[in-house]
Length: 94
Image (cartoon, rainbow, N blue to C red; front, side, top):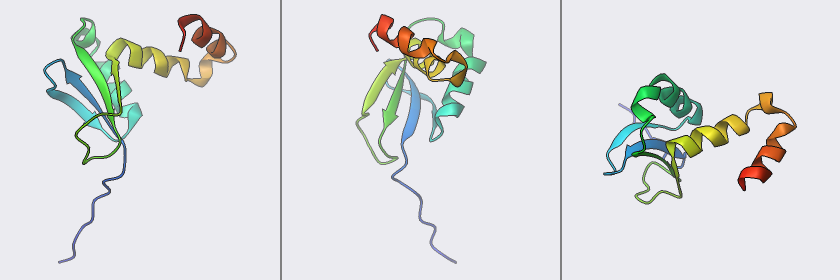
């Protein structure tokens, strides 16, 4: 039997409640966005955050955002917004 080496240097995005209980986690950012969109009613209320950990072995996140802020930033980064993206970022101070 061969030893399987897992990649521990990939970033991990997690959806957590405010007691730091992980609701969903993935190394693919698109999967996190899809999960949030699929469960909109769960995240309409404040009380969940999205954390980005630099690797699977990290204990401290390098970036923490509310779910609404995470979705807003990902919509702004999509190509469908075109030239409005930079204008919107300037208006909201991102």
